[in-house]
Amino acid sequence: MANSPQAKKRARQNERRNAVNKARRSRIRTELRKVEEAIASGNQEAAAAALKAAQPELMRGVTKGVFHKNTAARKMSRLSSRVKSLG
Image 1 (spheres, rainbow, N blue to C red):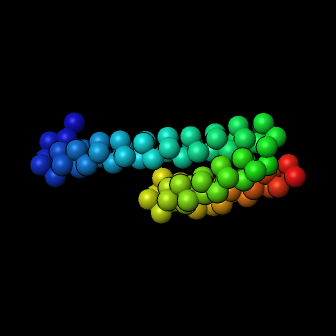
Image 2 (cartoon, rainbow, N blue to C red):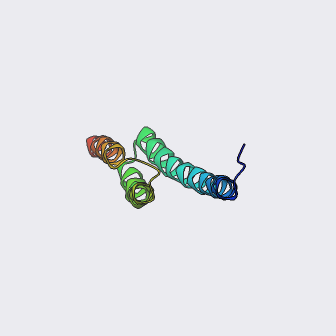
């Protein structure tokens, strides 16, 4: 348990950051799930639109430190190739 004032403050900051990061990760996963559902339905226009909406959300997660840059790039690459193959 945190004893020093600095450690107590750090614990409070970590709780807040954890909540923010959890919300951001959840929002990104929701966007990715929408792309997956559009791909599963076979509608290329809907899948492309969902992918276009998911990309900035995923990249924002990278800049905020929720995801690694290569992880986001890999996800985007795989999703975009799957959307392309629908056509």
